[in-house]
Amino acid sequence: MEKLLQQFDRRLSEIMEEFRYFSDLFPKDHAAHDRLTSIFAALFSLQSATQKMLNQVKQSPISDFDQSERLYEMLYKNSLILTTETDKQKLLDLAIDSIIEMSGAQRGFLALIDEKQNYTIISSRKMDRQSIKSAKKKVSNTVIRRVLQNQKTIAFQKPTRQKELTDISSVLQKGSFPLICVPLFINDKIRGVIYLDQFTKDLSPAIIALVKNFVTQLSNFLHTNELLDQLKDRNRALEQQLKKQNQFGKIVCKSKAMLQVLQTINQVAATDVTVLIHGQTGTGKELVARAIHENSLRVNGPFIEVDCGALPPNIIESELFGYKRGAFTGANQDKMGLLESANGGTLFLDEINNLSTNFQVKLLRVLQQKTIRRLGDTQERKVDFRLIVASSTDLKEEMKKKRFREDLFYRINTISVFLPPLRERKEDIPVLVNHFIKRYSEKYNRPAQSFTADFLQALERYTWPGNIRELEHVIERAVVLSSRTVLNVTDLPEEIFGNQKEMLLSQHYESLDKFITEAKKMYIEKILKECQGKKVEAARRLKINRSYLFSLIKQLQIKI
Image (tube, rainbow, N blue to C red; front, side, top):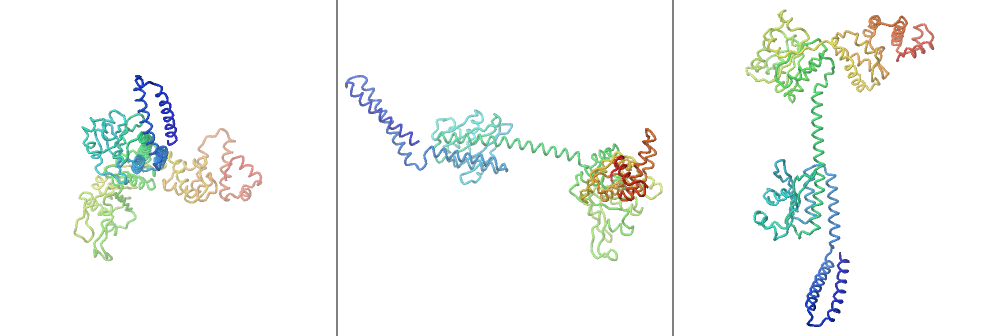
């Protein structure tokens, strides 16, 4: 800047010297003389102004060029802030702090508009990096509305030629000068403004350009932030959808019968209705009860499980109702019962069919009156729990035999859920086997990953009197004992592996050779299992040459 001014001053001096030369050539009364004199005066004035500017530049510690360089360096640093900070509000405050420092303003505001074109100030800062209270009262609503309407920057010193603004805006009348208000666009649509005022120096074109560049940076950040928010919203929606789809993730199934059970659970979970779950032992009644609780409005409350068959008749009342100190021998202090412990949550009474008829009367009274009285106490205590019960026997048959009260049955049989035995839903066996293999391979750090077709066929042929619980223990045993990645029939216990004879005879074969080949494979697998995979011992028991056994193992694709 200094060099340019010096060159300009030298050129003016040369022009003035030439002007003096030509001025002397004209006669004093010539008409052009007056015109030349006025031009000379203008040139002299311009040279004087140039000299003053040159002196100011020399006296200034920072030239205009250096100042612009410094400002744009700060603008670059601001861009780094916008791309590294993750907390949106903190970032916006830092951004406004930065533009205040760069521009020399004493106050800065960021306002965004909603769909109805109403604006909200989301960041308001002072030079000391503190927030401004009652920010909306400190800005000119007139200026902001005009910028939003015309979508053009307003910038002026004091006094302003835009008299219509100062006449209307009381804030401007109080002297909040200089002022600049820049529209903020996202995707070519106006979304807000940056408002700066009370500058410590005049608004130069460089400062105005700087603020506009800053607003462009901020617009890009807000656009990116909106896209991230949209992605987060979509992610949350997908998580909710997946959660809804897998809300019963602990219940592994694919059979039509069990999918119907899940549908029923989904319909009743959000209510407080009593649910009766019935099915054979090992069918997963406790899992269903937990699934109902975990998807209910009481999910944050306790889930109290009571195995009515495991509690002796002489202590079940004290366990469920609690007791007062001194109620009986050994009652050394007050104790809360399980019914009270379930307050705000779910009470699951498993094997409710094992309750005595005398206790059934007391339980019915609790369900009707929603109160309990501890043993040895006279005080009635309110209880609030959701009741889920389960039974492995047919309660209607129990009623006929007078072992279960009709009034209690009709009280608890609001919603009935039947869990079919595993033998009636064999479609679930493959997914259950995969589930258990993965669980116990990870738990015991074993190599098992999958299973052969023969392995699955053996499981599907078995009747599973112990249902899913028995299947789980069989797979756990196979995973622990096997050193292979693929489980086969030799990894199954004798009671299941021995069932292969029925399977062999029940299948249709294309020829006798096919049948003999399958029978040979099955027998060799059985002997190998009994010999714990030792081929030499197996060949001796089969009374064949060891090399021939190796050949058969390869030919029949027997996995050891």
